[in-house]
Image 1 (cartoon, rainbow, N blue to C red):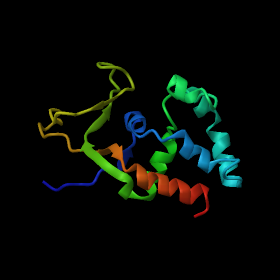
Image 2: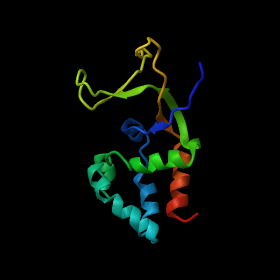
Image 3: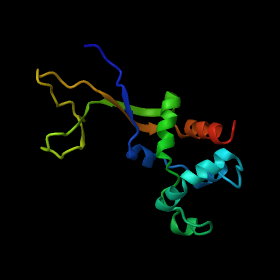
Length: 150
């Protein structure tokens, strides 16, 4: 059969968790280290992220473990859109949405083992690309280019 590239690319939360950046990197992108409109914008939209991801006040981070790190999930999706080279590992897979309520109404399901078949008995073709791992050095470069005007 003919292989068709999936039109939907998904950067799931699991990929984000595996791709946490250091808070020191975040600090380099926002005021006072980066006193630009872009830096102020990033700082503003990440205010809640800092609270919910467990960022602790300076001085307490090392003693308490420092939380999860900087997890810019939307920025990761934008980086994948901008440059496919940030993708270190991905998988093309079939994904559907349960509408009938037999497994759970409105939930996504994935054919991890290639067992789902269509009405004609043919294997379901992959329709999404699931991003599993990112090249963080390239992600950092793209974020620096965006927020530090490089």
